[in-house]
Image (cartoon, rainbow, N blue to C red):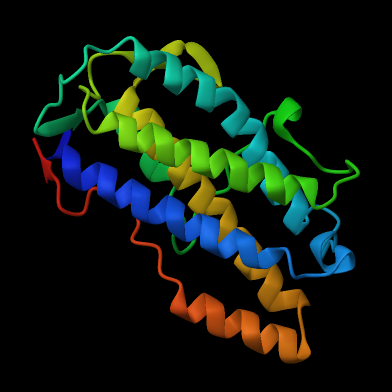
Length: 213
């Protein structure tokens, strides 16, 4: 099992979510063509990557909120102990060198949908709701209630693990978008985006300061 300071976990997730908001906000300046450009037939576009994230967030937001609301107030625990399954899934979501492709459920695949800037607006709105969940999580026990895993609802996740999965899933597909941008966007706009991406660092919610037990 992995154990980490609860305060450190929440601050890490807050930092990553704020960075995601800042990054995606800048995507609004790309053209409709750039946002919908498909590099390869089996690749998602930038908007499809974001719509995929919106699909999962629309499931997890109310489920996590429900679990938090059922927690006793002021039940904060100093340490969060991850369940091995939740820990495995959260770490699998993290972007990393040579990361393994994860099969997408058909109902969470946005490929071929007609998408516009509303996708970005929805993503940003959802991320602000995630910030609210994380702030509310500071005063409760992240291990006291569970959230059904989206791909197999009989599998229950601790609240802390569910939050990690959502935030890490965002990081994974934002990394995919960065790859798309490096391939497609050119000229002055590419130079500006590359400068922005170099200045933007995700702190990776990977329990680096936690300890194995």
